[in-house]
Amino acid sequence: PLEAPEYVLWEITLACNLRCRHCLTSSGRAAPDELSTQEALDVCEQLAQLGAGAVALMGGEPLVRDDWPVLCERLRTHHIPVGLVTNGVLFDREIARRAREAGVGQVVVSLDGPQEAHERIRGRRTFGRALDAVRIATSQEFPNRMVMTSVSRANAHTLPELLPILLEEAPGATWAVNLT
Image (tube, rainbow, N blue to C red):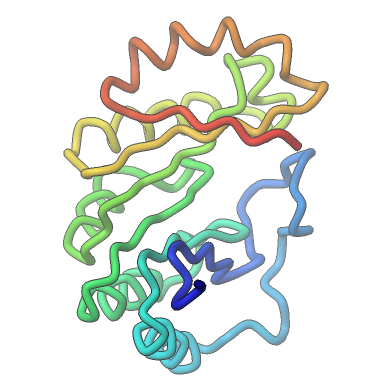
């Protein structure tokens, strides 16, 4: 029987620094009714009361919301494992350090194919930054590192080309494929 949510995917903002072709959330600008920091902290408390097993912060792009570390820290005070799902563009060594300090145990970086395919979907000059984010996440010893590939007609044929890149650049990471 259902007792509590095992894994919560929480879109903490619709704001995003990219305009991906496959986006299902119409991300771009923050919604006018997005939760304030205090309201989001209240949700953290409610998730703890429900006995949530784990929470992944996503969006839009969760890193454009300044209070993401505060939300992570609050969840961790309740011993709830926390993850970040990011497009990788903003995820640098400083963000990785802040994520570790906030108790983040899972980092999921979106990488939708080799360079040409990824940039056709996510925008110019995004592949290198996403790949850097994958490298940083795998080198920073987050317990759970994942690469998420959203597959559509635009990139399905490139999966065999992406595999050797991930084997080289993302040792120890899990590769998840999202069919859109």
